[in-house]
Image 1 (cartoon, rainbow, N blue to C red):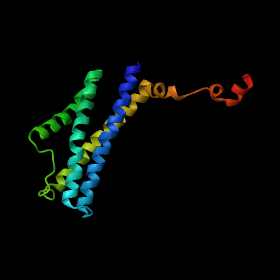
Image 2 (tube, one colour):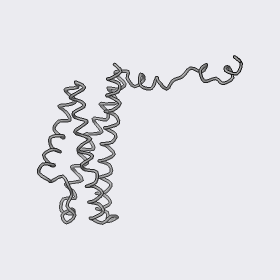
Image 3 (tube, rainbow, N blue to C red):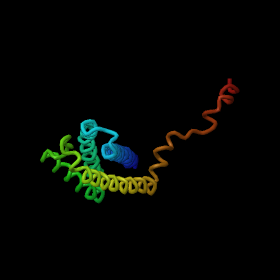
Image 4 (cartoon, helix red, strand yellow):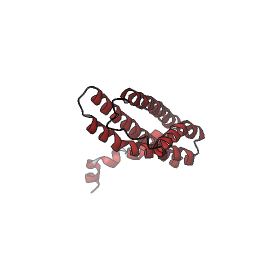
Length: 157
């Protein structure tokens, strides 16, 4: 029971990181489209977070497999496979010279991934609350008022 609570907390944090990576990339692409950022700066910022996003999603998928959550593993496997395919074909980075040609396609791809991660976020939150693990995790931080009352400790002396 405790390991499952720790796994769901890890899933929650990793999903938040994946959402943050995708939001950052969408904002960079939107800034590029609105001409607030030059292509070199936008490409370098996006390319800096693509590999950590791929690694995080791979670990996310592998943890579902190790935890025995087969359905969640099978749901996240297609994106992990697609990320691996992009990486092996060396098409995962954005080219500075052709960034405007593929701008709309890149934005749509990242918005679809963001929607997928938001659905996973909802599933993880539902699983945390349905298993009751959310309250078990944070019950460590709950103290009785008697333990924290300074006046009672002074009266004991």
